[in-house]
Image (cartoon, rainbow, N blue to C red; front, side, top):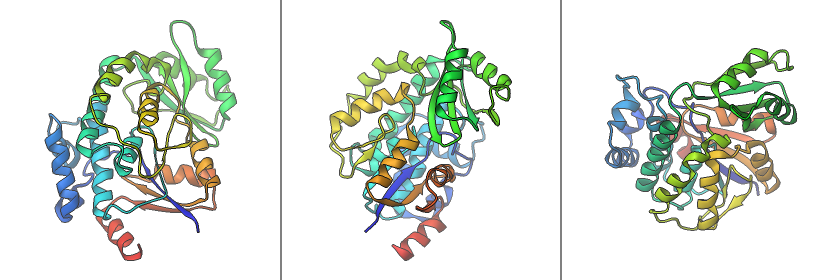
Length: 308
């Protein structure tokens, strides 16, 4: 019997109007979204639904918005069980809710704090990220080493799928990588709309503050294994999961290795819960043979409930 994986997207999947259909039509989703609103210090729901201020893209707002959308969908689905769960970067926090490691109302505070610390550490324009298409991980790593200096660095940050590696670091180095990308043999180097050098060693500056904050919450053992970005293996022990979530700030997201590990464990159905189909696209490039399902809207939820 094949195994099912629930996977949750990270930053970049957000869009104006996200989760509004759930809020208006599903009681369990409405409850979770109201809970999210009550846990944060800004108008989260208005930002998600309308974004009149144009602030949804700010890291400290994006992170709680994505978490709230994914968990609202999961609640609307009736909180089904999977054999494994995985999230991409921020999405790993949705996995922690789904697997019972952290309470939703705690995680919403944690990701808001995480986003704020990231934003405070690097004012706009200091750090950035870019997707490198058409080069292997070893090629990207070698170029990063060539470009990096003592003053400014660039490093592999998201190992997404064959031929797609995201790099992170000082904006000057990201720009240099982008301008020389073709000469290095890349098909394309696309700077990403992010405000910081996420998953690079630059993020170590917030490690202590983040660890101190997250330690004030109760972490429980996972009911289903959480495949962690840092080392691409399933974990259930609360202390290990917590430790890896701190390291996740400044470590690459090992998405290829994670998906391959899951397939080795017998996973053959990957269900993406949240806005967009970014992760489904990555999984398809890693292994064409697995089944993929995307749950983004209340209509997708209804379809899921029909067949579940």
